[in-house]
Image (cartoon, rainbow, N blue to C red; front, side, top):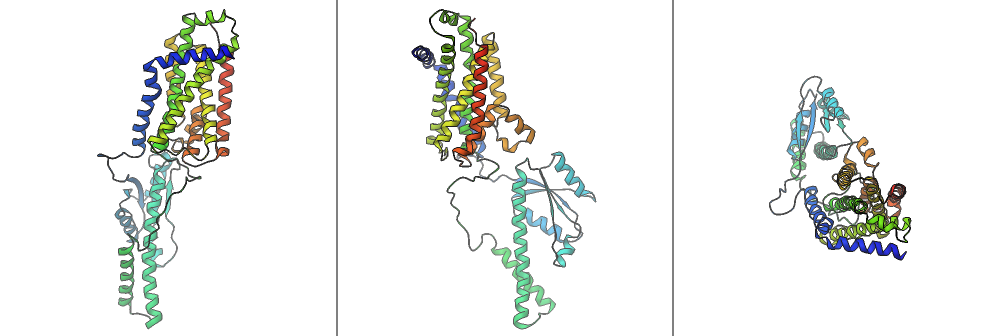
Length: 410
């Protein structure tokens, strides 16, 4: 055990003496965490646009009366979404096809008898096509529901005014009934926004059932920590190649140090550096950026330990099978950047297609990012990240076994 600790300490001193390595371990991930966090949060202060994001909604108005146009005018007046109209008798089929092909994220189809059924006070159904793999439909559907709620309130107010007059003074003449209805509807419209009574909602915790995780620094901080632990960890595979080239390992094998001890030491110093880097970045996210790392410290420790162990095993494996420093460097860059893109470190996997999500869970980063989102955005307990930690542990075991089998000193 003492020999293992000596090798680990020696490599840690070499890393600490290299200023460029410290720059990549800490300065770069902190800078990227800040920049990416601003990008995902829609910008910060000092000149950033504060205008709300507007989404497009494809609309096919098949209505033969005036109410369809009135509905679209009300949606447009709400100022939250932009309407993308489609004309023609087959507009409804065209809208459906555009959404199915992925060219449009959502579409609203107003049926031909919309005005007629409203005039007869019958229930009428609008068709809303959506692409479940896109974020836009949730926003556009909410905007439509808000407008429909207001229109229903206006109509109900008009009916209520006529009914109340009839109960008090008898059935009103048609002209008076129309005036009562119009005035009551106008009153609701005028006082709808802002309403006379509002509810102040205070967020006390995270939403456990949310599909899309929190963005801003809540995404960038864990994502950049995972990314740079992986990138720097795999780049450390070059050290193993250099030790073989300089015959440092060959000389070490002539000493009374077991092969297993050398492998454990190589895994150990990479694990120590990865854990130090990970927890410094976690502390920076919590103290400087206000990231809430969740209610389960044990869960966070378990996820970081298993993830860093997997990275350490993959680093030793990569260094064992690479024949040159250039080959190890190229492989480290390709592997780390590919895993980051697939694993949802640059954008949440929850907003990607199902096939992409499946590919993301073929690499450790996908499981690690899921666990981080469960802790940070959804407030899960230890049980909520145990499955991801188990998969990361299996990755660590697999990479370590492969590294042990391929480890060579010359």
